[in-house]
Amino acid sequence: IKIQRTRVEELRREVRQLITSTTEQVAQLELIDSLECLGVAYHFESEIRRSLDAISTRTRGFENIYSSSLRFRILRQHGYNVSA
Image 1 (cartoon, rainbow, N blue to C red):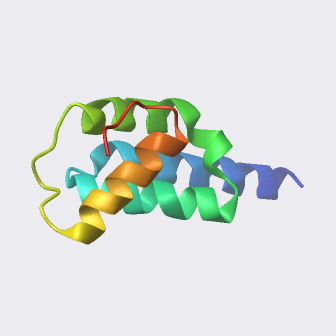
Image 2: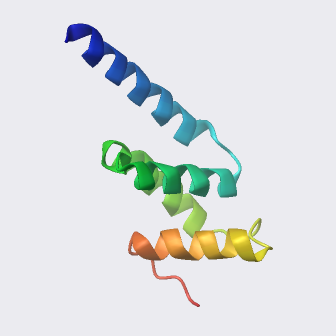
């Protein structure tokens, strides 16, 4: 059981590092979306909030319909006020 806990903590650190080190905004949103689909996003709430705070203030990099809709959906799901 101790080995499993150690592995879980190691994986959490890796995912936290992934969230904070990913510089491309669409990749960050895809990672956040994947974590939510897997049901493990609650482990990384503060990191996700920081990423979304930064993404919510920028509109560059969301030129195509996929990236714009992904940004819109995830920000709205997290309570950000995003105009349609």
